[in-house]
Image (cartoon, rainbow, N blue to C red; front, top):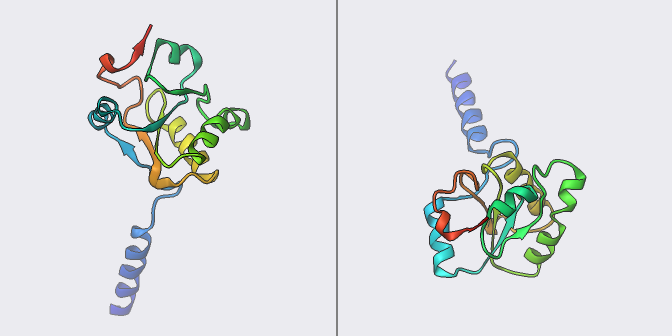
Length: 140
C-alpha cells in the first residue's frame, strides 16, 4: 500500500510539473506595457486585430496583420511579415489581439513554431478591448 501511494505521489509530481497542453504563455500586464511604451522600449508590436478594429484603436508602430483569429493557414500567412521582422531582431515581441485570448495564443504558437525564441514573446493581457489607457493609442 505504501509503495502504491509513493508511486502515485511521484506520478502526480512529475505530471504536475509539466506545462499544460498547448504550453504556457507569457503575458505582459497592461500597466507594464504602458511603461514600456512611455519609456520608448524597443519592441515589435504584432497586432492581429481585424482591419476595422485596428483602424479604431492601435499602438503607434504596430504591425497590422489582420491575422485574427490566426487559426487557418490563410490567417497564419498574414503573420509572415512579423516572423521576418522578429527573426531579424533581438527585441521583445508583443502580440495584440481583441481580448488577449485564443487568437493571441494561436499567433504566439505560430511565431514560436517559426523559430522566434519564446523568451521574447508576450501577449498583452486582456487585449485591445480591455486596454484602459487610450491616451497612449492611436484612435479614430
